Length: 146
Image (tube, rainbow, N blue to C red; front, side, top):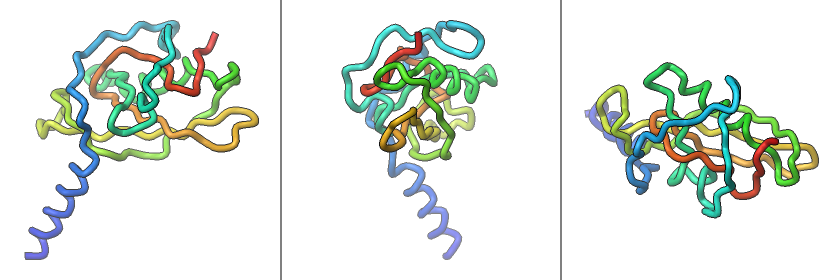
C-alpha cells in the first residue's frame, strides 16, 4: 500500500509542472562558435525562458550535447546593457511534454539556470529544455552578446 502511494506521489510531482506549450518542431540551431549559438533577436514574450511553461529549447540530447547546448545558449546572452553574465545550474525541475523523451514516457525535465551580471539586484531563473529544439531568442531583460 505504501509503495503504491509513493509511486502515485512521484507521478503527481513529475507531471504537476507540465507545460501547456506544443511539442517542439526540432528547429536546427546555428553555432556562432563552438561555445556559443547565434541568436539574432530578443523575445517580446515575457514568459519565454523565464517560465517553466515556456522554456528555451536548445536541443542536443540526441547527440549527447544537451548540457553543452544549454551553455552555448547562455554564452550568447548579455545583461540588459551588454554586461557579461555569469550563471550556474541550480538543478532540474518541472516536467514538460516531449516527443523526444529518451525513456518513452512522453515527458522530460527542464534544467534551471540562475543568471546574474555586475550591479544586478538579483539572479534571474532561465528554464532550458535540452530535449527539444526551437527558435532561440534572448529572454526579455537580456541582450545578445556582441
